[in-house]
Length: 247
Image (tube, rainbow, N blue to C red; front, top):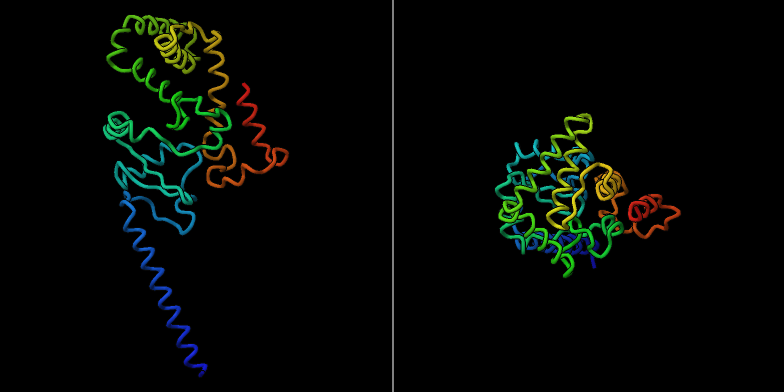
């Protein structure tokens, strides 16, 4: 067979393969629901290089002015939909909570608080999580809170007194007020001072827990799950996670 005919055959085969591949990609994209607009994507990594590690809310506000109240980000193979309007947040996560209560798996959160024991980071997966959410939703609903207005006024009075005597600790006093009110109406036990055991434990554990979940604090295990397989002696972040878990 002529080398020329052979090369033509190879070219035609490559052309047909390319057409088939492009058609498959287009068909796959057509089957996916349309996504909101967002920053320009870079092949393979998406928006990985432009997502800030700190003060995400400021960048989200900036992007919302360009792309609207709902926009799309893509980090590697993960798609993120950012919502910047409280009305839509209420519709999606309150009125339609049954279909929107789940969340992507977080390896770090799962290592710190396994088996969905932490309601804020646990996945919509078991009866314990459902029961906890149902109880909290009822106790913190507007109708339920109205019946506890006297309790709220008492906590507010305590807050004003704390701010008067130690204004430099204003942020800690606000956190004590919020936590004590929630503890009181859910568990029937308040935290009257910053030295109260429940309040002190929260002040110690919560900042470290939140910091561990922030982008850039620990290796991106959720993006590269194989990092979770690295032995602890070569992965110091695992010791950090273990320390937080046992606080």
